[in-house]
Length: 89
Image (cartoon, rainbow, N blue to C red; front, top):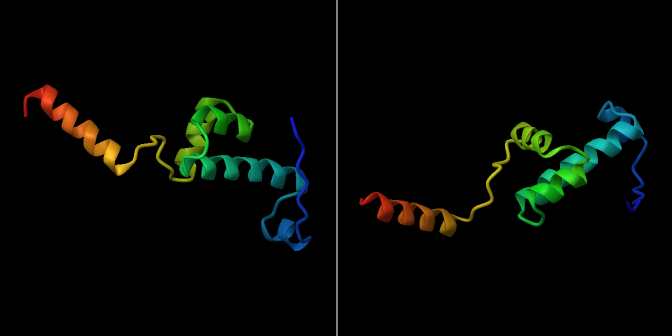
């Protein structure tokens, strides 16, 4: 694993009520969720980045109100059209 060092103002720890270790863990999780939301990494890679299991990552997504499904509007429309054709609608 690679280590990344980030300099933060001292006041951020008290403002967020986190010690440096808690902040580090939270930043990993938040970054993983955001990168997943942006479609930059897979769910599996995001869970690994966050340092949690896949099931725990799904819970993180729910916490942050991020949809666990990565579909574009066009992909969803195509899925609906395909379903409608199969269903005979």
